[in-house]
Image 1 (cartoon, rainbow, N blue to C red):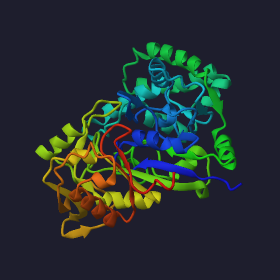
Image 2 (cartoon, helix red, strand yellow; image 1 turned 120 degrees about the vertical axis):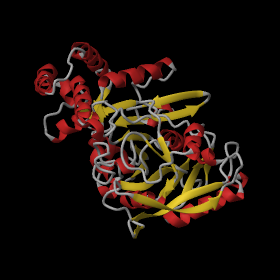
Image 3 (cartoon, rainbow, N blue to C red; image 1 turned 90 degrees about the vertical axis):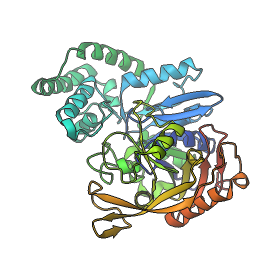
Image 4 (cartoon, rainbow, N blue to C red; image 1 turned 30 degrees about the vertical axis):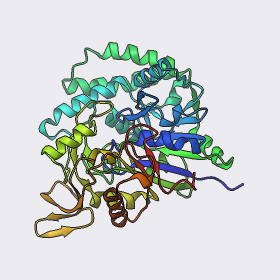
Length: 429
């Protein structure tokens, strides 16, 4: 039997592209769905059968039958938030304990990581990054510094190991003048959540996933955040703390580069960003407000409003290149339904120079160079086939494919599962 490959699904912009919905749509073709990086700062929203769900750490394949869902070693996990998330799903009739396994090598977010996150962000003042305050950065810091705690430590002398890390954090927090009054309450919830976690199966995930591939199972790897937030290739320092491009899947799951199959790259028909950092095509006019309103652009985890702007093809070409994207998926096309003109950034101008490739930094005074296209001014949310799409919208899709040189295989015209048009995948899945 030929060994199967892992297909990867990731966001190509600054996150919030709609990965959760598409994982849910694609999952029927897979037996395993695995998260490979990030933490509970990522909110994947799914809507179907009149219900809306927000997943933060649990893979988005959890709603599809008896699929095995795995939290990989590259993820950082907050036991308290995972428990809350799982219990909310249980209340809606989804018992996940038999369908979710957790890598022993995944790192734990501790209460003191959250306090450190808040204290460090406060100390930056106006230069703050815009972190969600979930403790992600400090947890990855401990991982790289080789001082972190992992899921597998729960099966060992956990309390001794925890206190050693906690005491080191407390010493640092006291030097920063942080408020520690809530720490006892946070620790009580943390210990209760650790006991709750013991009800799940801890696995050597790198062994499990490679055995699954040997057995011929189809595996989908689910990324979090977006490619422009990659710690190496994103808009540093306004980035997340992990590698969000497809190469991160190899490290975050323990598979070799030759095990990567299809790479699904998701993007919105426009562009959004949460928090601080450069955003060349940002709109602060009535069109930007319309995008935010029609697109319900508020963070699924934080509730923070998202900044909105025109699609940025310079950045998209860059992230497509980085991840070797084979299939594009366009989300929220319907948000632009009412606009008479659509703009797409095809290059940047910095001073007297024009850039079609991503410059080292986006913090310079960048002027986006736009190409204008006619809007379709027709509601898309009722379309269920490519033939029903208006000609002007099809022209926009053809323009994007010519610019990006990768086929757009799926078009989403609304939040529900049914509002999904499969263009070039019907014979593949």
